Image: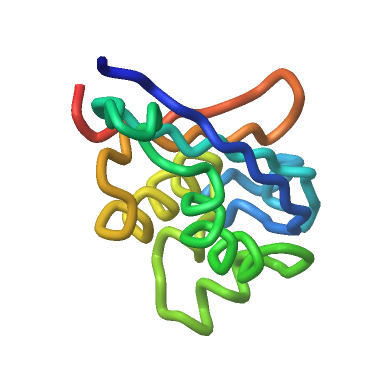
Length: 127
């Protein structure tokens, strides 16, 4: 049986978007209470009844969340020489998380970043 499972994570981070025009509010340093959804797609194991243990997803994802939690994401991008984190839009964050996790989470389907309670972005490389 094919299923899609989702594990949610939260982190607080500051950022600015250097590509935005002068005077745009997002060009200034500001913060968000980000929520991220990690979506894994696959077949349920008939013996366990699970696709994947949610605790296993947490073990893989937690170090990346902790890397950004209560930090300025742009500064981490500079330290790591990472263009996606230098310009940490929701779109770039979703792609960055996907690229970090894709080899560690079999069946990774998509990453959803909620920047606010009304704005989100989903990165899914296989349409």
